[in-house]
Length: 111
Image 1: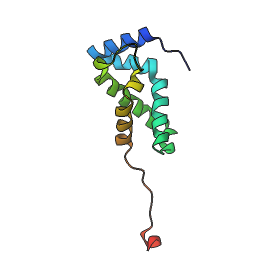
Image 2 (image 1 turned 90 degrees about the vertical axis):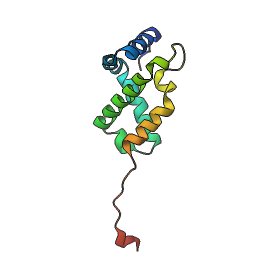
Image 3 (image 1 turned 90 degrees about the horizontal axis):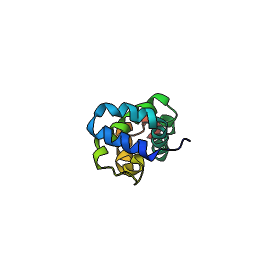
Image 4 (image 1 turned 180 degrees about the horizontal axis):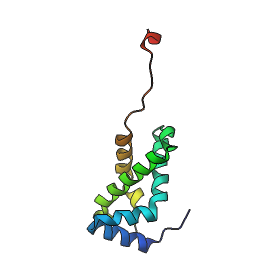
């Protein structure tokens, strides 16, 4: 796990609030951390299958990064890390994105 430079993070968050393209640099710098956050929420939601799906996690990383970018102006340096600060919204975003788990059910077996 790498150490997070608070000055670099603050600069990216400030820049991201003013320029949406900076989200690319944000994901380049913190994508691995965001992936861990996404996997944690997927495990919490009992979706280990999706947590092991690299493409699914990567797609959610971008969703989370864009979510944080939309709120970057409200984040305060020196406080919680952005992905912790926005935790509740990120949990909702992940839950909404993955929907409900589906299971094949044989109706005749239930009767």
